[in-house]
Length: 140
Image (cartoon, rainbow, N blue to C red; front, side):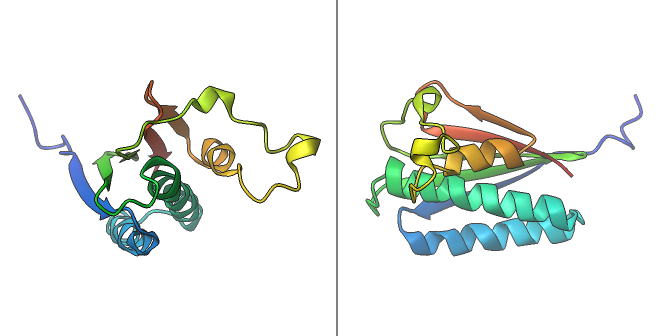
């Protein structure tokens, strides 16, 4: 069987301490992957926004800024798509019961837009059942 045109997956993993400074390490990885795979500026911007938001949520809401808890970020590049997973060590949350940030009573709120933004910018957004892991798909 000819294997010459089969592209192997590339896997990247980060273990981030639950502090805001960790976002820089994630941004560096996104830049590295974007450069290597010549990802368009639009997709790069969407990935940067989504992953910063997901990691921020994991650090603040999931792990409650407890630096002994880690946020695990994985990137799986396969062909023309990349699948990111962001997992925290928190209790999780019910992602189906989030208030709609576009509802009139929520427009003035300073928080509550992260998941809404992620769902709109990623090609696909899948939460695990407990809500402490999100999988984000992007076509590249």
